[in-house]
Amino acid sequence: MQLAPLYPILHRVLKPTFPKCLWAGDERIPEIALTFDDGPHPDYTPRLLDILDDYGVPASFFWLGACVNRAPAIAKAAYERGHWIGLHGYDHRAFPNLSPIDLKQSLQRTQAEIAAACQLAAEAVRDVRPPNGLFTPQTLRLLHQWNYRSVMWSVVPEDWVSPGIAIVINRILQQVRNGSIIVLHDGYTGGADVAEITKQLIPMLKQQGYHFVTINQLWKQGIFCE
Image 1: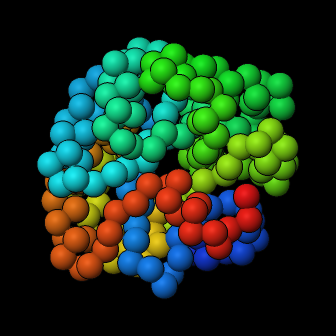
Image 2 (image 1 turned 90 degrees about the vertical axis):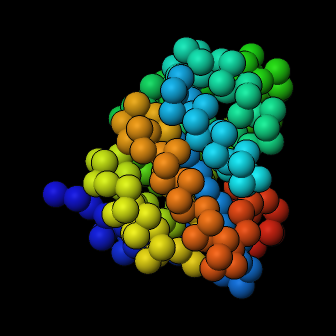
């Protein structure tokens, strides 16, 4: 059973319930964020980066520490091209299943891998998206306590089950609006189509008048409580 129809409903319920998370940007401004989870992948991510370069579009990547460890040069390339980098845990284990100690170590290990690959300070990487969007109030309290920023989503086309490029694009176009945070995947699950999806999607969204920004730019709009 595909869950794509449920995500817009979940967004409407969860956004006001957990206001310290970044669920979307300002609905008055035609800015949207393209975000990609589960990478970097040795084949899918370089092709995606080329597409983003072709259109001059900044994106935000939420990386797994284990994948950065396997492909540090690709991680560095994404960072040097101006994309925003966030954390997705070290190995995609659900955050609520981890003890506080294990969760903190997972995030710190991922920060260390990104810092080493991209030659930046580990504390500069503080945006976190929970794997599979799974979290509890305790998870969010811990992230806030440790000075991380919790980033969620508003458009989830469920590309990881590979429903087809046209279906993914259609789901996005039906749901997108000002401030949308779109979630796609460039990892081992769902990443095979991500470059082509992005290649077709960007001009469609530009034609509708949307501008692309990073997650950090959405935070800077100042309408959220960190």
